[in-house]
Length: 159
Length: 121
Image (cartoon, rainbow over the protein chains, first blue to last red):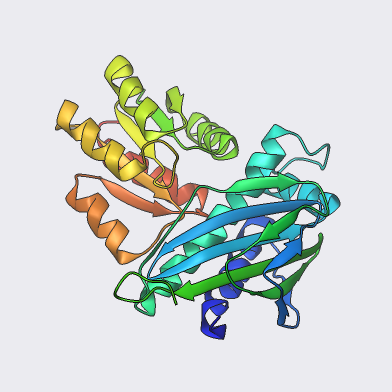
């Protein structure tokens, strides 16, 4: 996977999180993760189709997700209920939408699928190719951005 | 008081928009979680304005916008979406959307766009 594909997601993650939780996260070290990996307690999975295709997976602990959802709703952190799940899924949608806008500026036209929220640690997720991972450190804990994308060839075959 | 239909697959976003619009003095008369339901709800409710997401299951917001415009050419629709690329904005505006708001949004931007789309409110 080209490293240039993860940068729009990291920048989008920083900017969207800064706007919704009112504090700017700090990115950590880039790492490579095998094509099958296990989830954290809360994961948002979003498909990307178009000139590049694959998945973006945003992972975090339940505590972090609950705190971020509360900040997004402007309410005190309570339980991770349906509204909190929806807020966290929407966070993934906003980051991915913002990232695909940035990819389009680099001449990669992409669409995203509606987010799927996976709850439960150690759930296996398989991506077509190894993912690049960058953690973002927020005031509420760490959120990992996993991006597994490949460029689609003009003849329609992915490569 | 202007009547507004809020369309988004995310419960959180529907609740956020509903509160924001209600606090600003608008009435949210209905909600829909995908484009297909949005078209049905539009025909039933004939709202003054629709706030429409794009990425949704079943039928996306751009397809729903076109369907609503077939039903009522004068329908006022504001797209409210995480997708900010030029091609989506162009598609939406050429299909008759009044405005295009990119998420995450600031509340005053939304209210400003709504007031602009409904000049009599």
